[in-house]
Length: 248
Image (cartoon, rainbow, N blue to C red; front, side, top):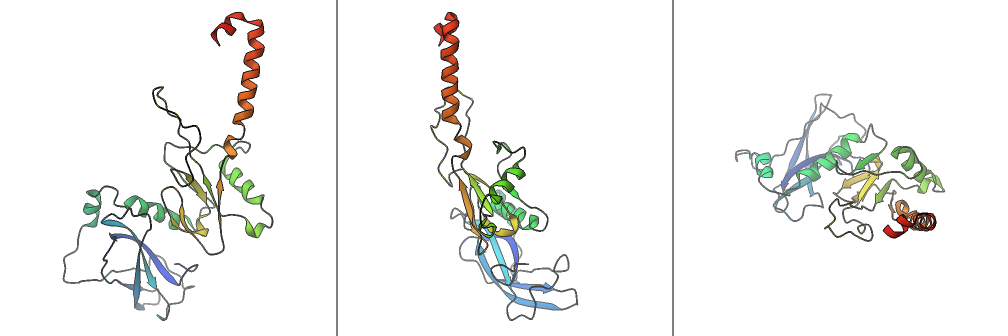
């Protein structure tokens, strides 16, 4: 149930990016009422203009007699009815044969809405990536400390965007002198209840009244000091070890 932006039941689906057909929602309530309401089809913004993409279907409750605070769960069903006489299409088969069709973006946002009632933080990264705190022992402690640093607490951000760096293993690969630019392969952590729409490398939309902070070079501020210490240590060792000095 969506209460933050518009009174609606939000369904995450997949359909054509452009030229979607009219959709209605049929809702079964716990008191045995059946309500048919208008639906708004909104493609998730990170769709790369592909033929098929992840989509939000907003079943609008205003004027339907269904109150946003009513309990909804397994007893609610949403049915899309466009052209009843047309045989159903196996959309999963279509998406499997359409690379980059956006089914992964549907998964991101499905994870977002499933975690809203149970998770304090949600970290969106690849399985082969890590976010390492400098001082705190856990990532949750890092995020909590960063959020607590804001005064007043009402202005504390609900998401943090991290610039990303790749450590390539092959010597012949050219290395980047600085992390990737913001929103270019960046990763992020967020409070699920304060987000509306997720993308691959950044948040597309936050709930009204909340904000996202870019964590720029926090993890790299020690680099210059570290290099100075290493250089000083090399100089000190070379004074007493000629062989080491020769190999520098």
